[in-house]
Image 1: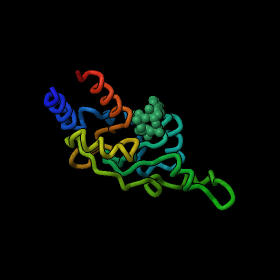
Image 2: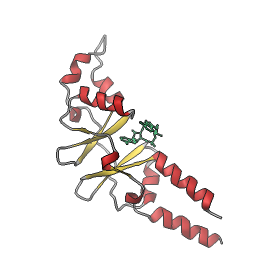
Image 3: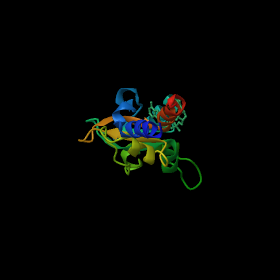
Amino acid sequence: MVSSINDRRRAVLQTPISEHMISAEKVAHVQAGNYAGHALLVLTKSGYSAIPVLDSSFRLKGLISIGMITDAILGLERIEYERLDSIEVDSIMDGNLPEVYVHDPFEKGLDLLVNHTFLCVTEEDGTFAGILTRRVMLKEFKKYIYTTP
Ligand code: 2BA
């Protein structure tokens, strides 16, 4: 019995991330050359605190958050809202993301999601494929815990 539970656990951990991710067409994103004002609009309207940044060929470039935008327009005495339409997203985004590929095992995502709320997943050539979120990961765990005899 113990060995069959261990086999199932191993099998889930080895499934490719592509089987668990939210696919690209359902993910809110902005383009690298967009102005910060546009990114703020997309973030506010979608309700997410951070979203991926892509280039015109749909390749992953980084991620942008409301905090990064606020920080970029923070002047010495006030928030300089007029700068929203002159700062480009790629000059303030976080471009230092962990590399996660569609064929990587779910186990790799699990390790990284300890420190990231979501992971951007790409094809081998850098084309954006989707995201793996903590929510999806926790739902998988819940399913696994309740269905394991
Ligand atoms: P946050 O935007 O900080 O959202 C934290 C959690 O709040 C989400 O966790 C989700 O459970 C809930 N939530 C926030 N906005 C929501 C919305 N508009 N609809 C439904 N639930 C919402 P996760 O689902 O684990 O997502 C983790 C992070 O992944 C999010 O952090 C966001 O930065 C990103 N994300 C998730 N789904 C996305 C999507 N479709 N497009 C772009 N980014 C997404």
